[in-house]
Image 1 (cartoon, rainbow, N blue to C red):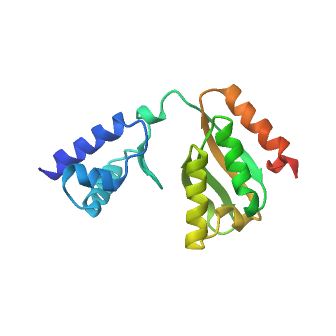
Image 2: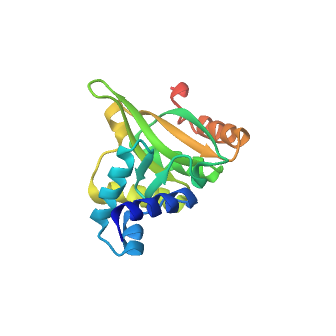
Amino acid sequence: MEPSVRREQIMSILKKATAPVSATALAKSFQVSRQIIVGDIALIRATGINITATPKGYVLHGGVFAEDRYTSKLASGHTAEETRKELYAIVDNGGEVIDVIVEHPIYGELSGQLNIASRHDADQFLEKIKHTQANLLSELTQGVHLHTIACKDKQTFDRIFQSLSTLGLLYHDK
């Protein structure tokens, strides 16, 4: 298969995807290496198409996966030990944690894609942090960070906001 045809087919898959699509899954379907897919994604991005790499796979902005969701940001402020409580409160109330954003004094805005939509996702994320002994981005800013939250509507977002406020996990509560 010609590489240009493969890239068109990758775009077609990402447009129809209802969840992130991993490079490994794409590589398997095209019978190429994962590295070939990573290169294909880089070339597609170079044309100006907005594809985000998340821990679960690639997401095409504007695809099926992104449609019909209410998104908004909220400011959190808590310790690393309270992260599980924060993530559970968001997903238990119908939200998905799309990313985490911190303001670094030297580098400016730093962000990481999370795409956490369930307790299972949260547990896997926290286990990976523990296993790799990596630090949370929020540890760079003494716990202050933003999250982009996706959910079905504003009422769901308001419920998430209220839950986090009740738990004392929002930055304005400090």
